[in-house]
Amino acid sequence: MARRRLHPYARALVAVLLAAWLAVLAVALLAPSPAGPTWLVETVARIGAEEGLPSSLVATSRVEFVLNVVAFAPVPFLGAMLWDRLTWRDWTAGGFVASFAVEVVQAVALSERSATMSDVVANTLGALVGAVAGAALVGILGTAERRQIR
Image 1 (cartoon, rainbow, N blue to C red):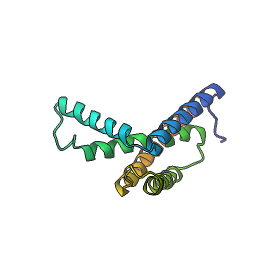
Image 2 (image 1 turned 60 degrees about the vertical axis):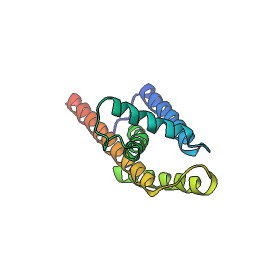
Image 3 (image 1 turned 120 degrees about the vertical axis):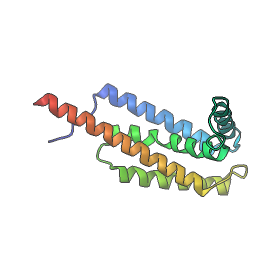
């Protein structure tokens, strides 16, 4: 059975959201100064501590890792709705390649930024999480549509 595409208006909305998120990511990841990302990590860690989370969970290195996962997840999640033929493997591999490229740029061209393998791991994990969630949503929507057809 042929796959049904999103309604054109929904597809346009998803495309705009994806483009906007990619722009936000590009600014955050390729800004010459680490001030913005550092502020975000410190703010989330402080709020977590104020809410009573254990200090082991709000350590800045853990908060940074989780935020890197969260930052990359929307790309394959939204992308899966636009390009449903790409698998979770495709999205995860793409996330790895994009993350690795960003870290290389940070290491070579952005002297104030620090390139780390833990960022590559977190971003790749985020791509995997987003891809699996996107594939699940596409599958659920496809199942619901097939039930309506019967």
